Amino acid sequence: MLLLNKTLPVILSPIGITLLAAAAALLLRRPRLVWLALAWLWLCSMPITGNLLIRAAEQGAVHLPAEHVPQAQAVVVLSGMARTVSAPSGPSSFVREWGDAVDRLEGGLALMRARRAPRLIFTGGRVPWDVLPTTEGDWLMEQARNRGLPAAAISITPPVQNTAEEAQAVAAMLDGAPSTHILLVTSAFHMPRALP
Image 1 (cartoon, rainbow, N blue to C red):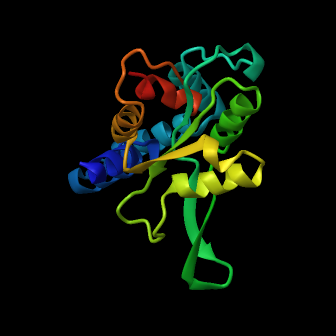
Image 2: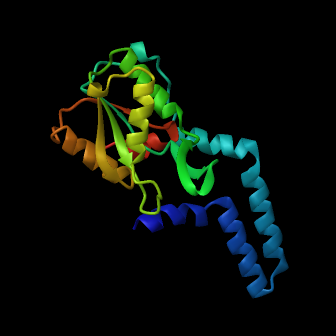
């Protein structure tokens, strides 16, 4: 299931659809389909298209200053902001580096500095093909501690592979109480899928 969750978006991305259409055009010997596929790729590559799609996915999300956010029992920061790469020291060693969603960590730390919750929970994101033995949550905890957050205020879920597992792991850590009030930190376009 995880493999399907990770590959299906690639196949259904503009480049994936373009390649599928081009392959179909070659098999069916329909050159017009190639031009249609290239037009589709061009349309999807336009900044206005990307901006409209992201705006629709974000559904009018509003960024509030941390001081205006209500108090909660925990700040929960979802994984998905780091990637594993070859270390500069050689191809046989690997390290984590920041991906596109580093603002998740920054948002979580801002909420903790504003004392919006007594506890920060990182999810232990780890896909089966990751070559590092630790989870993204372990790495994020180290980053938070390096920025002055005390280790006693930080928790990490067990290893999880997707958003649904993150939700289950956090609920288990908080005793699954439905009245538990958390501050969920993720990317705006990811929020509709991350909400219960």
